[in-house]
Every structure is written in structure tokens, then in C-alpha cells.
Length: 220
Length: 257
Image (tube, rainbow over all chains, first blue to last red):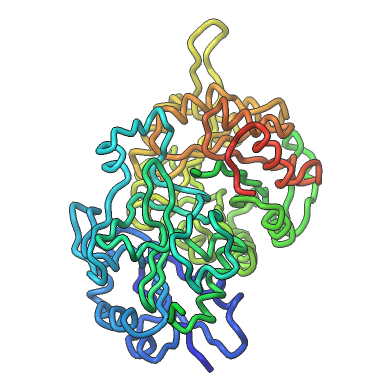
């Protein structure tokens, strides 16, 4: 029996993620929702979701002693970060007046409103509402086993007000336009992460999750 | 390439069944919520909203089970409204598999509840639903007020100001229903919708009055809404969600096809 661990650190409801994974997992795979470092260490695949504010996420991760176990998994095995589970992989978030994050990738997490102001984008006349909520296109910027069966520029479900700006642009696996062009998926070695919610993105989202359950963590 | 406008079928659920009141009297049975939700998902619905119209609060558990059953097999965003009065109610719905909850009357009686709920679960999970009626006379500048209890009780609250306040209090989205139009099939109140869409920084969903597919496009193009919600035109196979999207695309609106 192969194990898929969904990391539970008290940030948001993980029912949808685990149900969607169960929907696509093969019969010899078991999906568990867990906050136990031992489960994360034992798992073959690790899914790191999350929603809510950056400060609360980091606080919960620290209090539960999950920072090191999660980082270790992100260095060693197929690892899928979703939404806040992608954002906190960076070094720093501008949310909540600034929060240091896990630092797996150099870069920061920024507020759309700030980006619009800096780029002189008139949010009001363009009717760019924050949060960025709904179905937007993801332009795949590298070929990757996780994109198998997902056509170019398909739409996925987003709901967020902050976006990742990694220093190393080569880790981008997908980009999306919302006033600005931002990184909506990243990939590096055994890690894949998305700003959007595959568990809420109908058939394409399920395809991505299925690809993950089949992925050995290698790019070729 | 940009964000698609959303089409959201709404299911009125009573005692665990989908129903649709025609002029608030004749409640026609429109099926099992899981079956209906699955069909809408297959047709390309961008989200699904459940409005619990169960009369007795003793039967609240029924809607929780409906949400659980739908969330087990339909993988698009789900919103639940109707009788949400406490943070515990909000959390119960989210735990059952809802992505958002719609708060209506309880926000009017206790605006702090919206703050509390959004602080606890995040703005992205909180939709504030407002039921508005035009109160200005012919020739006067447009003015709408909030009504509760299915449009029967006035509150004296200005609808546009109320929407702004709710966004300030942490609503991640505003669902605007025109009580003048609800059930009429003559189209959204586009002035009301655009007045609110232009006033708030969060997405707005237009609701109330859809009778044909062009009305949906009007809600986006003239009402400036980010999403359109409709119930009856989808329920009795008058139109599919797919047809609605085709129609919106013909009007040059970006949709998920």
C-alpha cells in the first residue's frame, strides 16, 4: 500500500483535497489527512494545501512542529503545494505586515493591489476585483509530467489576493494574467505547486491530481 | 487571456430536495441535489450555490448531508446559504465540503458576525447576500434598500452603502438579488447591479429575474457583475449551462468552455 499524506495544520478544510485525491488515486494508494510528522516521513507522496492568512499558517506550522518535516518531504519525495501551501514555500510574504516563510525558494509573496498601483493599473476602471476569484487560464511555461493530459491555457479555479514572485524565474511551470502576469505554478525537482485549487477545478484539476498520484518525482 | 466570468446555477433545497418556488407558492420538485449538481458540473457550471429554504431550523442537518454528498463527487466550488447565523454554522458548512457560505439576514441583524466569520475562516469563504428593492420614486435618483424575510421586511439600509460596509467587514464577494425582479423573468435590475459592482472592491454576483440567456450576458456587460446566478432557467431543462456559456461567448464575454 502506497501512502499519500495530506498535511493538516489547521488551516482550512482539507476534505475537498482528500476526496478529490481519493477520486483519482489507484486502488493500491491510501490517502490520509495528517499532522503527524511520522506519517509525512512515511508517505510516498505529500500534498501540502492550506488557506487563510500567511501569519496564521506559519504560526500553526511552527506550533505543530511541521516546518522541518514538510521541508524534508519537499526535498525528497513527490510534493504538491496548493494555494497557501505554495506561498509559504517562499522566503517571505508581504501579508500581515510581513511574515517570514519557509524559504525553500527565494522570493516573496506580494499583494495584487500593490502590483496594480506600481504598474499604474486602474483597478476600478478595469474592474479588477480582489480577491482574484474564479476560473483563469494557466499558460504552461515548461513541459512537465504533471501537465500530462492537460491542454495549454486551460482554466483553473483561483481564489487569492497574494501571488508568488520567485527570484529564480526558471522555477515557473505556469503563468496567469490578472492585471499583471504572475506565476501560478512552480516546479523544481520533486516539487510541484499551484496557486489555483486543482481539487476545485473540475476535470483538468482532477487530471493534475491524478498525474501527481502517478508521479515519481522526476522530471524525465 | 483573463479571468472568466462565471455562471452559477442556484439550487433551492428544502428537506433535502431541490425545489423551485414559482411566485413563492407552487413549489415544484426538481430532483435530488446530488443528481442536479452533477448534471450542472458536466454542463460546465463554474460554481454551484445551494440555498437552504427548509422551514424548520430542526432540519438543518439535512443540508449538511446534502453538501457532504455533493462535495464527495462534484469538484467545483460550492456555496451554501440559508439560515447561516453563527461562526459554528459557517464552520459546519465548510467542514461538510462547502467552499463558501452566503450570509444574508444574520448580517443585517448583526454586522459584526461578518467580521467574526471572515476573521475566522478568511474572506474568500464569506459571501454576503443582499436582497434589495428600489425605493426611489419615478424621476428621483435611483435608490435601493435592503429587505429581509423574502422581501417582506424593510430595514431602511441603503443597498449600495450596505454592500460597501459588508466588503469592509470582510465579505469576499457580494451576491446582489433584486427583490423587484426575483421570479419575474424580465432580467436583472442592471442599475442596482452596476451601482454595487462599481462601489465595492470585491466580486459581485448578479441575481434575480433571469428569464432568458441574453439576460445573463446583460448582467455581465451592463450590470458589470463578475458572475451571474440563476435558478429556474436551468432547472426544468429550459436551457443548459453550456448553452448559457455559448450565448455569453457570442456576446464577447470570456467564459470557461
